Structures are given as C-alpha cells and as structure tokens.
Length: 174
Image (cartoon, one colour):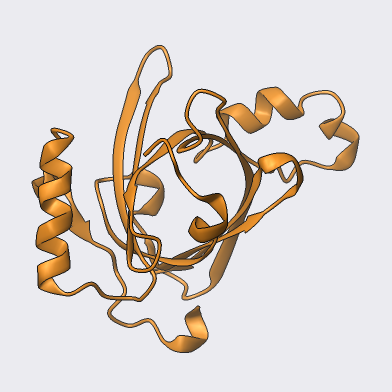
C-alpha cells in the first residue's frame, strides 16, 4: 500500500485476529494506539492484558516509515534499561527486543480494518506474522471474508489466523 496516509491510519486499533506469535500467547484485549510524531515517524503504544494475572502491560516504540514505501515501517521498541545504559547500547538492544522489526500495512480502509504483515530474518530463524486490526472489537463476517480474499491475493493463508482473545474485554480495558 504505497500511498498509506499516516494521518488517517493513526488512532486506536483493536487486534482482531493474528497468526501464531509466541509473545502474545498469554495476552488478551490487545489494543494499538498510533500517533503522528515529528519527522514523519509514528509513536506506537501496545496495551495487553495478561490472561494469567489480569494485569495490563504496555509496550511503547517508534515506527519509522521507509523511504521506498511508507507502508513499510521499521519499528523499534523503547528499551526499559536505566538511562545510564541507554547512551551505550540503545540501538543494539532496541533492535533485538521482542516486537522490533519491519512491519507492512498491506491494506487498510482506515475506518474499519488494517492488515499488518511482518517477515523478519534473524540469521538462525525468521518470523512471518499476520495481524488483522479493527477500529472496533469485532468485524462482521462479510468484512472478514473480504479480508481473507485480500490475504489470498498476497498468497497468505488465512487458515493461520486465530481469533484474538477479546471475549472478556470491557470498555475499561481500552
């Protein structure tokens, strides 16, 4: 999606479906808030509820659109290291933190859904991940079917997707 409008894409998103991702196995009620930052960057805050403890965790980072295609972003998680360490190792640490990497917005209509894809090579392993985000907690069956059709155009298997654990999420969880 080479003409991604970052202003329209910004805002509050719910994770609706995803492919297997180890980091999200014990998480539910996942939301993503995207804000525009100076110099064309995006601030990203991911909120997730632990299915074990019921407590919430937050992950914050910055997504920098690539020059070649603004729908492809290099996302770096902000490290939680003490400031004394940050001046020595921030780039190296942030690159390898879970969640850091390249992500692409394959498709979005801005008001209802977004298809996010990531394929990262880490030398000894690689990840190939898909997320379906929605502006609301649920997508109707017709829209899901349309999204699955779009995934097949990219030769991505919708059978890999599982519904995100949003059944017991309240409005207070947003």
